[in-house]
Amino acid sequence: MGSGPVVVMDSPVDLDRFPSGGVLVTGITDPDWEPVMKRASAIVTDHGGRTSHAAIVSRELGVPAVVGTGRATRTLHDGQQVTVSCAEGGRGEVYDGLIAYEETETDLADIPATRTHVMLNLADPSAAFRWWRLPADGVGLARLEFIVAHQVKVHPMALLHPDRLDAADRCAVDQLTDGSLDRTRYFSDRLAYGIARIAASRWPAPVVVRTSDFKTNEYARLVGGRPFEPVEANPMIGWRGASRYYSDGYREGFALECRALRRVRDEMGLTNVIVMIPFCRSLEEADRVLDVMAEEGLRRGENGLKVHVMAEIPANVILAQDFAERFDGFSIGSNDLTQLTLGVDRDSEALAHVFDETDPAVTRSIEMLVLRARAAGRSIGLCGQRPSDDPAFTEFLVKTGIDSVSVAPDSFAVVKQHVAAAEPGRYEQGRTAPSGTRWSQAEQPSPS
Image (tube, rainbow, N blue to C red; front, top):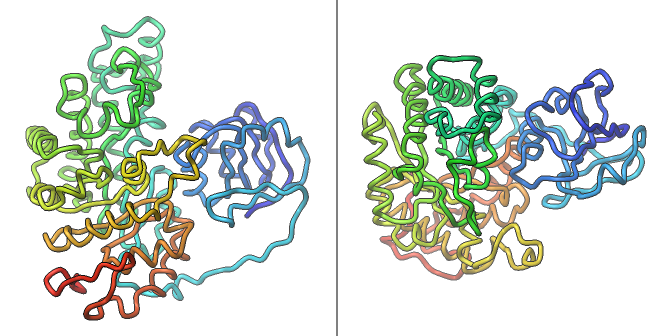
């Protein structure tokens, strides 16, 4: 929660007009807003969702934010005293006036130890060192696309094929790259520095870096992106993730991502970086992506390189044993897994009441995947917002025998406490899973 006087701003240029402790109210934010966001006691925007710039950066800055209100700039006015609350979990509230509330401080020394690892979701390299004191077990999800969108800003294929750009985009690329003779170095260097900052903040704990998971409409919004991206009716299940990395349309761009990751691990020595492949639909795709990575100097097993796969498609659950032969670990992407299991567009307001990560079809899929991953000797975790908002869901995950959960930094302490509360008796013989499925002796997870 945060409170203070409203400051409505159209652009971030007039930083002096924003008082420390003010409540920033604006349409939408981008990286240019970050100096203002760091001074705010709270943030309210008209546009954006859980994965918008405002949502991600505010979580990593520890600033409460209510995004996507649709009408904040019309409803709130300069100087109005308000209280912004995100304490309710998935729904934010903006109250008129300064509302009294209780605040609880947690001493890091009092955070309980747990056998289930609790890791962090990070995206913004500039905020990574803010959280280094948290006794987290590493980073379960570092979003590479955030670094591309906000620090690189240029579509990688635009740097490789400037001849396909119009005059305006060529000029924009020239300005961003500052006349660099090797524009591919501009991409890979900026990407490497961002990854390295996150990896260094948790060294030597593992840092799982997800390769780019933009959808085509999001790639198209990068500078110079439109000539290289098709227009898709449903980008959410379109040309994204693994399918891009070996394709003629993006193979060269993925090579630049690999170059950045190789530099971080092999030149900078940050070998705690684990590479994670998102949205891998089939075993053939897995093989093709791993082959491309090997060609670019990222061969699984060399220099201790581990490669994980996002488990967000029912095929990843059904063929878990086969995926386990190709990858070193799984990370459950609960949003997409719910969407594709229930056949629900997660962004549809009309179907919001159907989108439920606790639906039995979803929870049984998670249980099944955890059992199969552990039977194959592979690590298995979940990265998502639900454990932060729902203690019962955290308890369910712990009781499945999952290895780790990865949450936003501002939720770490409370999730760690929920995990600790759920752990006693976790490995008792013959226990019953939440769905009523009893594990056999052979399937019983070990406490390792």
